[in-house]
Amino acid sequence: MGTPRDLEEITRSLGEIRQEHKVLNETIAELSLTPQADDLQIRRLKKRKLRLKDTITWLESQQIPDLDA
Image (tube, rainbow, N blue to C red; front, side, top):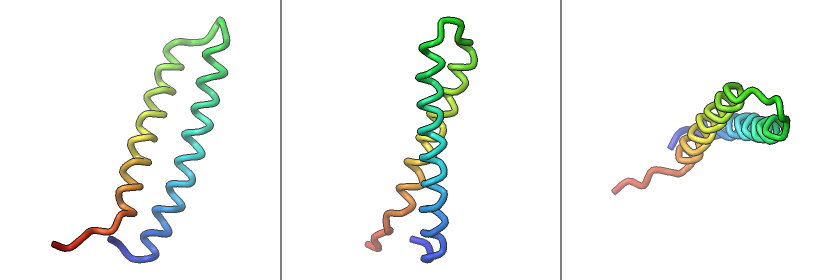
């Protein structure tokens, strides 16, 4: 596990990324309701959202302390 400063940075990053993920989710939902929605744009947004989710998962795992065996 890193220093307290590292953990603060991870926590801050998580908050920012979670917010971006939420905004993307809302944007995708709104676009999906629009009949003239650009399917390519929606697919790109969904890929971006998935990458953010992967990053969130990775950052959360960084917050878990390593157990020395």
